[in-house]
Image (cartoon, rainbow, N blue to C red; front, side, top):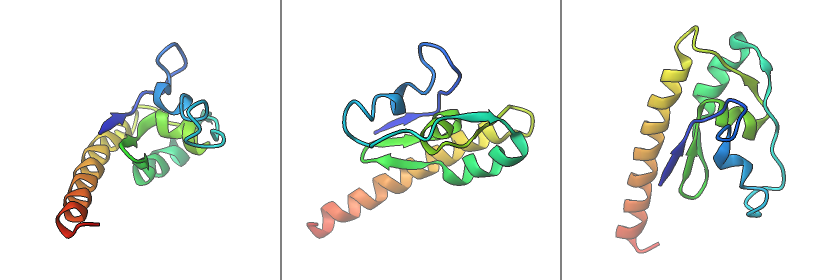
Length: 104
């Protein structure tokens, strides 16, 4: 399981999701939109999830994938997105464990 929440422009910005197109795991990225913390904060926290098997994304990595607005540290949602990513990871582990136990 990989959890990726990077996002700012630069060599490591949205590193995980930028590889998905070339790996044919998604057709295209939504593209990170401009800074709008009022819009982005809730959207990113709520949207943090496993986007392909084994890859949970949040933060501005998710902004790039979903085509959402950038977020900033002002209201604490960056930290909350990390917490949500951890919760989503645990949820995926539990789901996979149940699948293995039931033979699916």
